[in-house]
Length: 352
Ligand SMILES: *Cc1c(COP(=O)(O)O)cnc(C)c1O
Image 1: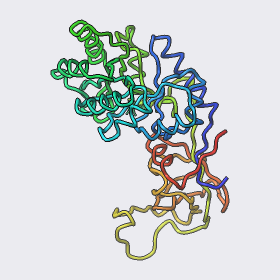
Image 2: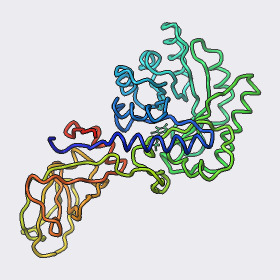
Image 3: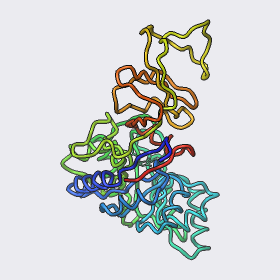
Image 4: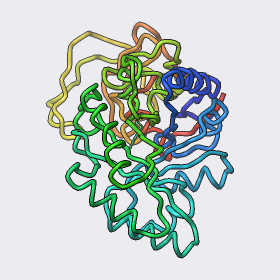
């Protein structure tokens, strides 16, 4: 296989998904598998579905269309608030969308009426992280107005913490979120069947709390793909950390000095390089760079050090593990490296 490529171990992903389904099921919580970081790749989506995840969520309607066209059998939620201009596609392809703006919901309502469909709506509520969400003071009138719109059906509330500002899901804010369900069910005579309480950062809250309140759904991306919860990036016991790895090829390997020669200025990215004189070293170059991946998110799986990188090169100190041209080198990746390499047109995928 032509390097660089992502090696995607579908059986490890399946196993991660299956373990998480069991852990969350024991707490009465259903999982929505979040597919955005792999662009809705149907093979990965299938491995989650076959592990018992029947609800998939993505932030991009294009990814949902990709999975639908590949005939992935699941319910699809658009988990980023849609733009009004994509309302037609959202109603055509998503079963549910998460929303915060009445003008957008009005556009969804119009599209749904035209398409003779009922489109399900979740209202995202602001719980302190200050990304998307309706303020509590505005929730009552928003619900009232949504209930009066044709073609859309309010099925629940959602919240998202620990994303923009790292606000932790706690007993306090999760109980407060749960209480909203009872309050608005009573005041509006409705049933809120979906209470979508967060993402991979809710793992510790789910594990550590004796009651989930009304929360019955969590949206998980990173936990499934990377095997970690995301508040402290702790390994979740029993899950694979290396379900997805990145492989690059060595395109140069030479013994060179560790100190550059000549007067130095800024590097290609405007930074001032720092060097340490380690004498001569075996410097290997991997044919992969900042244009392909967030290099800071890579950890070599063999005993070499990353000395630096440019658009197209990663320079390694391979003195302890001699590499020759043509060798393939494997990196474990974090979420930022996954996102960037998945979206690079230069990085392929291999499934095992
Ligand atoms: C990305 C995203 C998720 C998934 O987050 P992970 O940290 O990958 O579990 C959940 N909900 C929303 C709204 C998202 O945008």
